[in-house]
Image (tube, rainbow, N blue to C red; front, top):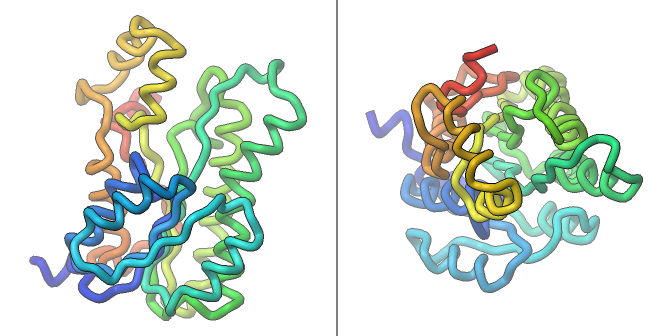
Length: 251
């Protein structure tokens, strides 16, 4: 069965790879034999991830993906890519009436504009190989499922899912697949900060909503990403794969 899931020598870009879900994805893909281009904002953490990966030929890109210069740099320096995982993003749950101009623009800039513009530059520079697979990281809080405080965050993720639908049609003739993955709560550094701010009782009450009885781990999302990058999903495009322990089954 390994022949259906191996990624040996495939060139794959992973953004937001210095921690959390992105780190878990990078580690999984490296074990499957991929040559990785990993991007992150924290040099120390990004270097540690690069050192921990199988092989020595992985390349790092340091910086904030909202930077047009970094987008251009990645689009010019990468070899032709067999896979793209646009995972970098910002989680902020803020009541709608508390948002201001700046906070709305920041969430849309980080979660929608940055991955969209990077993807456009990669396509324009002909850096996406035929039959490649591209994955955008969405969330269960999106255009389909709402949450308290998730108005703008969910809107930014819902916009990504809209991009996936139409782009999968535009690129289908080249055999290029475009999908999104929507995790529920995943145990990462970012979630621990949120847990502290909301309080343990609120988190325990939320945990009861998950039929499988636990929050996810980065490896759970990495498995879904691995599948969508592999030949096992060669006839799957334009979908949103939900990885949420059954949370959205309630609705």
